[in-house]
Image (cartoon, rainbow, N blue to C red; front, side, top):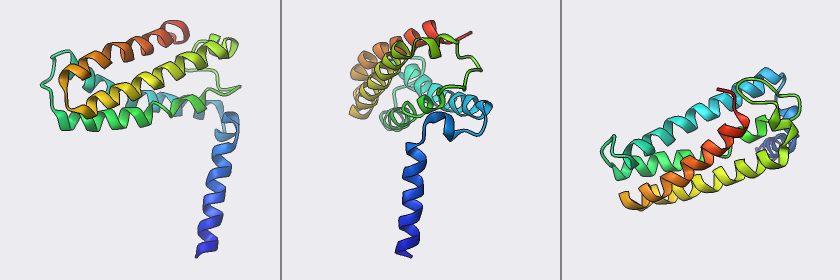
Length: 148
């Protein structure tokens, strides 16, 4: 049993270490994966935004839960932007300006961690303060690298 678990863990780690292009059988699979991740991200981000902007009542427990999901999901889509995965709403500039794209994605991930921490605090003012910079980090990437 221990040997089987060790092999399963080794296979999982090896799969995580593969280049992004090797993780998806077809480019369309990568596009679907990142679109799915961004959809989940947008749902949880929107829920926090509604609370931060007074469009929904502040619920500390819901804010914390949405923040936790947001921080986790914000890490997911980036592996699906490997070479040969062009398509969807992604502009070709992503693959031409990888350094800028990576910088903006790292900034967004950092801001979502801050937003998640603010959501976890149970303090509406902290949520409001963290939401703006997180939203701006999303917008910066969309403006440069996403087709409408």
